Length: 178
Image (tube, rainbow, N blue to C red):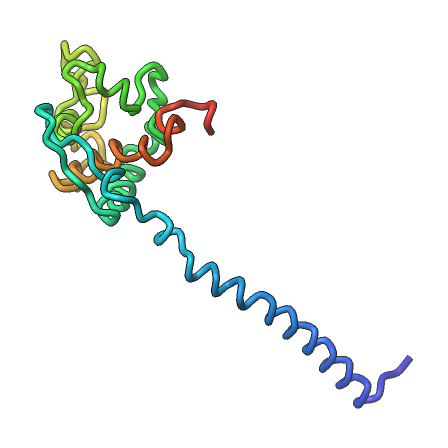
């Protein structure tokens, strides 16, 4: 069956019209997704972004941007072993608030976490594990730590402490949540 140029063009225009109708349905959906972006949905209140700054109980409030920056640095530098707040090499020691609080010294505040990232100690605080755990002390052994500065460590600590407030028990909860 041969098509004449006029029937061929009518067929093309018909297909084009159907495609445009589909786009007209899709455009409002795309606009809605652009307006309600994940970045906007991730704006938390001050209570969620406020965590202990030091062992004395002083608090610090991070911004959404700081937590996002801390997440990026954490995922790049620590995420291989600590994705979702777990510890792949020792499932008994996670980054959940209870585990951090029970460490010696307690690691449930920004100052203590930064100190740990600079020179990590065993969970009971008895000896250094800097030769086994990435740290600033042995940054030449751990490429992910080489370019980090104190501000990066502070942002990662903020992310670690805010995450359980956002993710609940899934943060540090282990493989049952993944």
